[in-house]
Image (cartoon, rainbow, N blue to C red):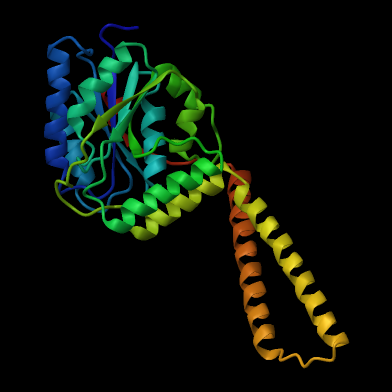
Length: 320
């Protein structure tokens, strides 16, 4: 293990002009402190990945990159999404860094935990997960929906680390192994545990957002959860099939019941049961078509083999 590893901190950014000056100040301070004590190489750097921001995010990054050697920038040609911005950063620094740490720009993940990440890395861990100690600041809905999501994923056979987002450390060999996963719909939080390298957890307190607004409203959170489920397991399709068999069974029971009543010459009032059956079966069919359509859509995306992102400007190359 390299005694003074070259660390790259990757920070995806999307319209973060309000928080970015403070983020740069905090992260460069931590980087300088680790460099001065000989914990990491003095050539370590922070890579800010601008995911197609429409505000002054890139201006702030590019200006600071010209004056501060430890700050570098990567600008994507448009908004490709948080996960693709992370992948762009990881792939860009793959050859340069001994280890990478990914952290969001909003400072909610406690950057003060970074030295603990490095200590775990130097102890021989290839993957270090940043895990929240508690979710006190989350709303009731967000807290409980997150718990349901983790339990649901576990029952579907997906090995996720509860209360871990995208605050993590990866060694160079874990990054290289991660890059072998070439699918278009790459669910990073599910892929990293699949690597099965030696891992550790660092617990931290979630901070309030320093400035700006969250880039993950309810709509994006739900889309992210659906993407994670459908990218990793076909259990929903099997579930739809099983529910279909259940409806067939219920239909058979109703048929037997109707036949018995016909033999007994009982009057059957059929309007309510008919309407309920139509709505239930029709709803089930729409759900089934939607679930199957989600998977077909992913297959369609995969077959195109389009790149996950397009780089417009890379100051890392300019400095080298």
